[in-house]
Image 1: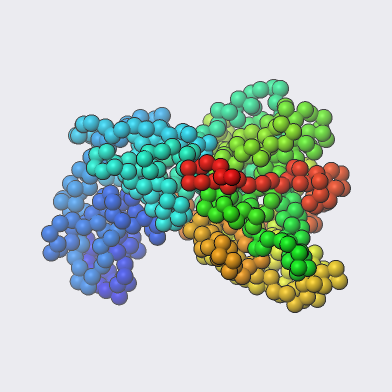
Image 2: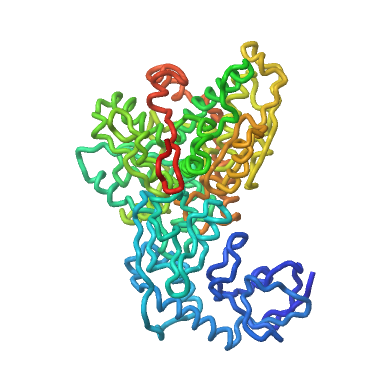
Length: 594
């Protein structure tokens, strides 16, 4: 511990702290802008400067370490003047069309100006080059709004390990983007949207599909079906003032019905279906390996489209390791335009499927040519959590005053296993709940069915599961130890994939989610998502799971019925046609490789 003085207040803190962290711990506010705890701590904006007794110049508090006897002023005349000038210089190169910006009233730059009391614009001059890149179906870049904080550079390079975004050129000509200012759709961007979640202004945002959805709702010839991913229910409330992790499932369904959607289904239903298909796929591969037949292990989950695009670019020769299952929302879209359309007697061309997702990469996923059946795209539009919140507000719905409504059936009932798809480790745990019971006839031997070694926010989590006393038909697995691994964030995926590519991976089954923490912190979720917010959303998802009467996918009665009435059997002809897919080898310029 060291003792120092901040604003005449003597405090004691850990010696490895920065001044900013020490001040925060002692309820002293130092205005800051580019800093993101544990993510981006490079002092690029200098808004957090403080005066340190004995120092020749002001120091960025997010980088300066505390020292014994240090005397710090955070609000001196010199500090206030510098902070004001720094802000005004940034503002002089920033458009002032706040009222028409999607970040209006949810803009960190706007809030900072209010905090440090900027009420005039003293500097005018040349503006930086404006470039709007809307080439991708997921993310839009507007360089006129960029304030060069470099948060997106850090998240893309250090947290995700993709490396698409970097500072190009120098000085006043600096722009943040892909090399040679190439459009995002022409490089190996995964469209994960983590850059969007950390952008403090409107320079990076999801491509807005709200008008397309409203148009479908106003079209009386269309039956508009909407589905919501499991992560939405634990995050949507934040856009209406609720604490992170507040479950708003019933209110969300009520709002969607009031907005005029004809059917409100739950992507959780096809999360359960994914477990049946993926679980059987895993068993087939494992059985083949233990029978000395050709099969590819480890098998890797395929629910995350950002992860899929990453592996297509970075490890194109390892695509056979991916499960062939479509992601759950694509499965539901395919069923809505086949099974459900037939059931209600509506032509599939007149069904418009909307997915509400925590993920910007889902917007790209629905454009893939593999996601078409019988000439119709499985899903027609994707809304992020943020977009749905804007639509609810636009519709004049007072969300906090809504009552609860249930999802519609037959594609609305789900188990607790489906809920946990929202968080890292959830897909793996859901699969194990079913696969272990299919193999042994017994329930997974963990407290509350939670596989504790793979619960939590660690980058890579592993577990061993020994099969004791399997059913006779699975006798080949007796005393076999299944080795599993879970990772979230593409930097973690790279570590596991290096082993796979080298042929040294010890695992049978790997779960990968493209965003750190999983879908609870997807690129389309409410900002800002830090570890405290992730933990609250994670706890809410497990709470939703534990409250369900049915917590194992194979026990969902509507899943049983859809196989009886329509799909016939897992991995059968109809299932492969509607629920499975293939992948594309890609180069670094998003070109298809032969």
